[in-house]
Amino acid sequence: MTAAQVEIDDHESITNLDNGEIFDSDQLGNFSGDSTILLNEGSTEYDVIKNCFISGMGLFSNDTTIVTIRKNSTERITTKARIAAFRVFTDAMTRKNNGDANVKCAWYCGSSKEEIDNIISYGFSNHEIEKFENDVRSHGVGINLVHHQCSLAAAVVGEGDEEGIKHLLLCRVILGKPELTISGSKQSYPSSTWFDSGVDNLENPRKYVIWSSNMNSYILPIYIVSFRSPRLTGLSGYGRAKSPCVSFSVIMSVLSKSLDPHRMNLIMTSYDDFRKRKLRREQLVRKMREVVGDHLLFKILKNQSHQK
Image 1 (cartoon, rainbow, N blue to C red):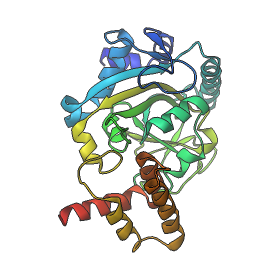
Image 2: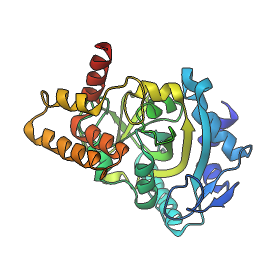
Image 3: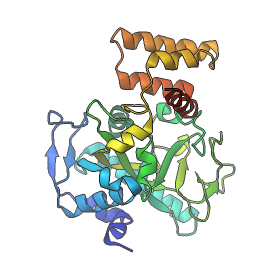
Image 4: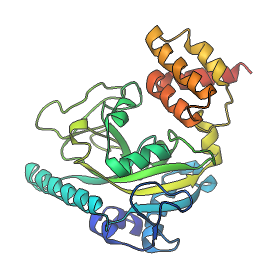
């Protein structure tokens, strides 16, 4: 086991390291709300998180550059309360499952800067739950996360900002006793009191699902990794993607033949707001993903790009 894996799997060493400076909300690219800590490059904590992230990017690792790594300041009263609550639930899960709470580090899937900002400030909400309801890649209607060695799986569905920067959220997660949930599952709670979470594979899980009733008890957001990966941006197909390049008008035309009137009306209302500059591009994309679902959007982008 590498030093990075030792640190990642040691919750105390992660949350108690405070290398870095307080990064105020007026500084470049910070997330709003209370202060977070900007980790210094070369610090032990920075290197641990960097190695964890880059090693999980696979073939895209050489093309990926970290911009910043931040963490919740343990001096914030709300963060202290969340850490204390997380420990209480960890202890309770330990007692429930004969000494094993099964706590892991995991990346939250498909995050925009605005979404992470809200999660850090207020916790997870129904907005995050809803985006997985129509996603055929999800393994249940809950908060979907991936193993800390699988950062690419989370990065590929994340949304980039205007500067092509993407953001991932690394969390501590209480899995307890997981049950198998299949891809595209509509399950939204444990099948019995025996189970506590969902996974894609019982022997070698890579995808985790935390049900909505436990999303702010069993998940503790800790680090925000901001990065650039040009090839990955092109692969993702939407957000700030530049390839394949398909205009919104073409997408709207195709969707009008596929969606029911109610969902199409929701999309057209957002599209009109976008054209009137009442809605930003990333907000329109997010709305499309919520209403249409990633599977259909990927299919449209792929088909249209092949026709060029």
